Length: 65
Image (cartoon, rainbow, N blue to C red; front, side, top):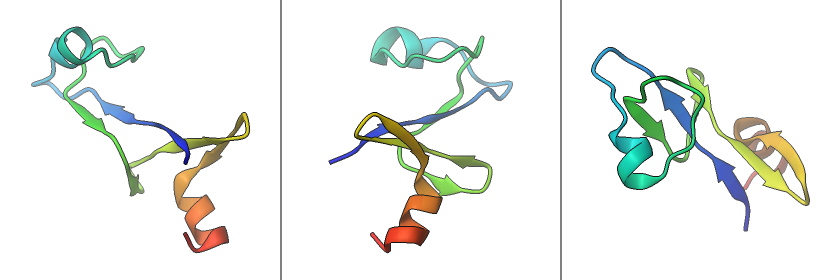
């Protein structure tokens, strides 16, 4: 099991509900979207394995899982 860090997007229609209602932690002023599990080139999640952070897309490419 891996700990996944979501990717946050701050489009014009964003606000603070994701932070306030769902406890999402982001340095962005407004949060429009939270990509919980993404390998999209516009927002790749990071995973934490044994205290080391890795790019999820690269991990899948290297390990096939």
